Amino acid sequence: MRGHIRKRGSTYSIVVDIGRDENGKRKQKWFSGYKTKKEAEKALVEIIAKIEKNELELSNMTLSQFLDKWYETHCEPKLAPKTLKSYKELIELYFKPYLGEIEISKLKPVMIQNYYNKLKELGLSNTTINYHHRVLKSALKKAVIWQLIPKNPCDHVEPPKKSKNEITVWNVEDVKKAKEIFKDTPIYLHFMIALYTGMRVGEICGLRWKDIDFNKKTCTVRRQYQQVEGKEIVKEPKSETSIRVIPLHSDVIEVLKEEKKKQAQNKLLLGDKYNRKYDGYISVWEDGRMKTPEYVSKKFNKILKKHPQLPQIRFHDLRHSCASFLVQAGVPMKVVSEILGHSQIGITMDLYSHVLLDSKKEAIKKLEELLQ
Image 1: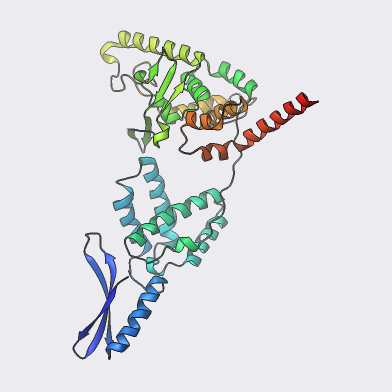
Image 2: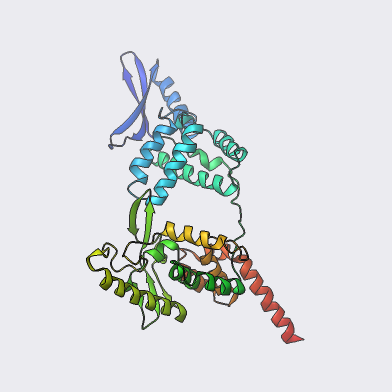
């Protein structure tokens, strides 16, 4: 933080640099009316100290105004559509109604803490409130970089710890029953790929035939298909590690071969009436239209509800089931992490620590039997 003193007529003024605006132009704040230079020098030290302690207003921009600017200049150019939608809902439904009218230079940790307490009263989970904290902290970090505020008030707030939700997965017997139930449904292919590879539904719908190597029995995950507010988006997976090669079980290979044969027959049968927009994609209807992630997930739930004897899981839980089976089979956690496409092995360890613990107990039991 820089400042200097200027003489204006018979009095002295203090000029403090407080950063640059969105156009890169230097911003300054003036404090005038000091009778002597010594008085101004003393005040300059106090002013800089207050600014550094966040005790002096640098900007009269409200949090609402700042979040609009942050979303427009920082979020929109960089974030994925689903993340953008989530941030927009958070800003409009929560941040603005509860904190929006507060000037960012006057936003204190206690205000944010009270906001989190209010969310708790509204029934939001610890995990959701923690997400609010991460987004708000990220936004205000940019306010510090832009020199609108000297310090991030979120640094001095303790958010609730994320809730550890128990993941519901199927066991081997559940899988045997489910394979029979889903065999003749429009999403059998999606079901088999998710169960045997742990791929996300968007990744499955984004698969093209060129991603399948029938000779090597592998699948390369290169993209994911999404629909956000009716808009189709095909993009690379969420991280570099999400782009991966996964070995395919022989049962999945057979299902893929059968699907490819059907698609070739449908193209010949329908001719010009076949929808060529998604030519080359695996997840399509008989007429070539896309079977979307939303359709796959909803259809999965609808079919499963007709079979209450099976644990009622989400389509995404097939991914968790796959991971659990891999861990139980003794596959190293690093390999499991690579198959799932996690950015860090710690994510895998955290998600499936309970399964890993069961495997360790089984290992110790075998050791006890061996040493008896």
